[in-house]
Amino acid sequence: MLGDTVATGGYSGMQAVGMGVAVLAIVGTFVLSLLGLSGGALGASFILLWTGLMVLAWPLFKKTHPRDGSTARE
Image: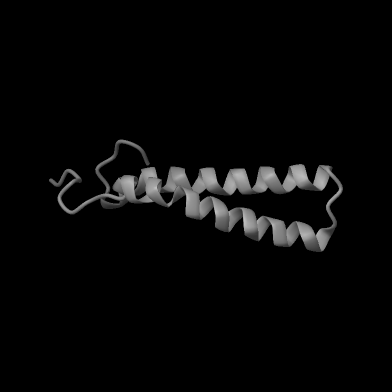
């Protein structure tokens, strides 16, 4: 959840990056299916898209990962 004081709330940025990667991989696979790619190749393309996007998004994961002491404690 955004803006809460739950200890896991610091990971919302990482969750947003992960959701972005998932959505882009799904949309990319859907576009390839519209272009006529077969079933087995679609599965392989999804895995390749997911892996490539995760590699490209790694700096964002590092940027959004909470550091020690960066979250508010009560």
